[in-house]
Length: 246
Ligand SMILES: Nc1ncnc2c1ncn2[C@@H]1O[C@H](COP(=O)(O)OP(=O)(O)O)[C@@H](O)[C@H]1O
Ligand SMILES: CC(C)(COP(=O)(O)O)[C@@H](O)C(=O)NCCC(=O)O
Ligand SMILES: [K+]
View 1 (cartoon, rainbow, N blue to C red):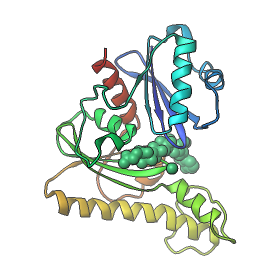
View 2 (spheres, rainbow, N blue to C red):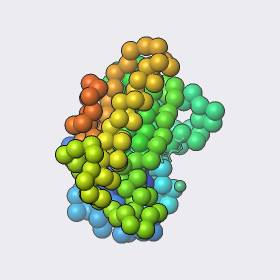
View 3 (cartoon, protein in one colour):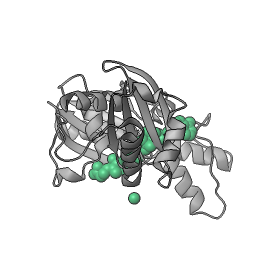
View 4 (cartoon, rainbow, N blue to C red):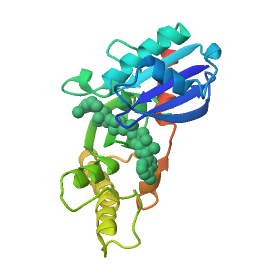
């Protein structure tokens, strides 16, 4: 069994693989002060530790990277593969400072089945647009995610509060809840549709679109541009990277 950890700022999206397929997935809350032992207590609800043969960690939260590293060493006696400069990923990064590109973005691209031009839209704590072709990241766009936007609104205004992530029946709201839901959900939907159009102007070529991330399902149903949802993309990328480093 190979454990695949996609550590984001909201959740540790975890996959269990037999080396070929992703057999099971689950999400643990990202908590930077959780100890390796505490993460293991959660983990052993889902896995049989004696069957773990490999661990891959793609993380953008350094304290959790350290906890999962220690967990892997202490409970599995395994040195995990941690996505960082020097690890073979098969992904080339065209950026001012390639070392600063998030491991999640690299894993997303590593999970692609096609080398053709592809736009990955990954909706998590942040919204990420990753433009890739021939295994190379040509550019990235980052904006505040849906849940983050709701929290930022509620946390920085006197009279607004957190609302459920749910699209309201109309664009024009008639109460505080639907006003915020419209602004955040439909705002994200039209931002995505608009951004795809601007990217098309810039790259001047056709591209596939894959949407992924914890918030992709609630947003995709309102998007009018054809795209495919792949909730396992990042985990498949971690698995591909595992095989490249055996
Ligand atoms: N309708 C929803 N309401 C609230 N949270 C949601 C909803 N749908 C998905 N989520 C949560 O959004 C979180 C963020 O997605 P994820 O891609 O895991 O973020 P990150 O990679 O930044 O940690 C996930 O933990 C997921 O459970
Ligand atoms: C943009 C991100 C914060 C997204 O993280 P997530 O939404 O998955 O929690 C992460 O990819 C990151 O920390 N990137 C490093 C900076 C960069 O990629 O340019
Ligand atoms: K930060």
